[in-house]
Image (cartoon, rainbow, N blue to C red; front, top):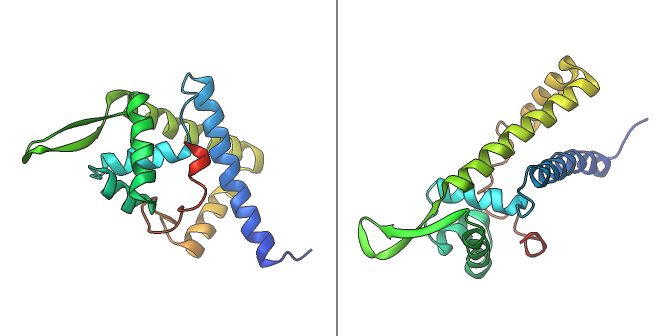
Length: 159
C-alpha cells in the first residue's frame, strides 16, 4: 500500500505528538503537572541566552507579549527568575532556576525512556534505521526550537 505525502507528514507529526504527549503525561505523574511543551522550549532558550521577553519572542517566533506571558507563567511556577544583568545594573535578565533545570533533566530522561519503549516495540535495528533515515531526510538535528516560525502557531492553549 502506497501512502500519500500528506499521510507521511501526518505519521511524522503523530510520532512527535505521541512522544511529547507521553513526556508531558509522565512529567505530570512525577509531580510537574503544570509543565507544557512551550515551557521546555522557553526554558531552553533562556538557558541558551534569551535574557528578556523580546529575545525570547524572537527565539520562539512569537510576539513579545506572548513571550512575556510565558515568562510570567514560568516565574509564577518557580522555573525562571529575573536577575540583574551584571553588565547593566538597571537591566533585568532571565535565568532558569535549579527547579527549572530539574524539569529539563526530567524531561530528557523521560524522552530517553520513551525512545526505549519504541525500541522494544519495533526493535533496536528498526529504530536505529528510522533515526538514520529521518536524519538523512530532514537533517541532524532536524529542527532547532529557535528556528524562526517553526512553532509560531497554537502556543496560546499551551500556557
